[in-house]
Structure formats: C-alpha cells, structure tokens
Amino acid sequence: MTEPIQYPYSKNSAFLGILLPLVFFAFTFNNLRYSFLHGYTVSWIIIAISDLIFFSLFVFVLIKRLIPALRNDIALELSEEGITDYTRNIVIEWADVKNIDMQMGRNSSKMLIDLKQETDYGKQIAISLRWVEGKDLEICETTQAYFEEMTRLS
Image (tube, rainbow, N blue to C red; front, side, top):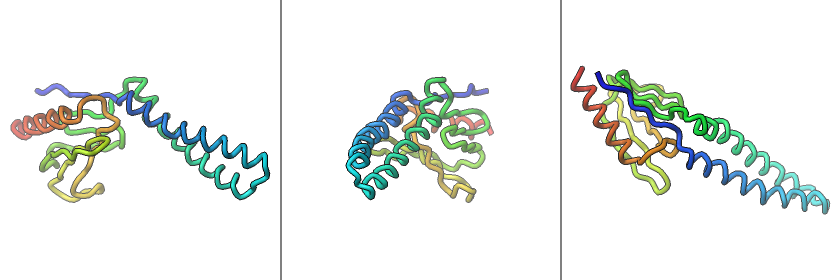
C-alpha cells in the first residue's frame, strides 16, 4: 500500500503571519497612548478597538499557526483514506474526489478539490497552501499523483 505523505505547518508563514499584527499593534498602541494622554476621547476609543482587533489576530495566529509550526505538527496529510487539512480540520475521502487542480495566487496558492457530490463545504473545497511547508506546485502535483494512485487501486 501507499505510505502516507505529511506536510508540516510552515514556520516562515507563521512568523510572517504573527509579525504583521504586531507591527500594526505597535503603531496603533503608540497613537492610543498619545490620544489618551492628550484627552482625545473619541480617538483613543477608536484606536483601542483597533488594538483589540490586532491583538486578537495576533493571538489567533499564535495559537492556530505558530505554535503548531514550532511543534512540527502536520498541516496537510495524504493517506489511503483521503486528504486531511489540519489547518481547517477538513477530511476529504478519495472516493468523494472528482478532480484536483491548483489556483495560483499572488501570495499563496490554493489546491482546488472538486467533489462528486455536494457536501457541507460545497461542491468544491479550496485548501490554502499558505500555511503548509513546501513548494505549492510540488504539493499539488504530489496530491494529484496520490489521487490517481488511489483511484487506480480502488
């Protein structure tokens, strides 16, 4: 039988994903301090809400992306049963897959999985490869080859 293929979380994407909200938080926090000290009530309330949003995004990326990346957790797995996307907790069985394509993006690519029937996720599932370690094209080609192997075996 075919061995499972596992792709870990991307440490680079996780660090970049955590850096952006931190930079914005630093800028807006400085403005918050200035507005609060000078008595601009409306300004510091608006900036405080922005800071809460940036801080929430920071915590989300820290918990959902950076910590799993540092622990070398698996982000995407190809097994005999199907594809498991651990970034969104989606399991797709090979029997449900009709076709696998790739959509190239400016920042990251997506693996588009066409399903034979409508599911809770729709008739097509897009798996973002942003959080997956490896070259997007190689991951997609490997997934397509794995899919062809599994359909040949069944």
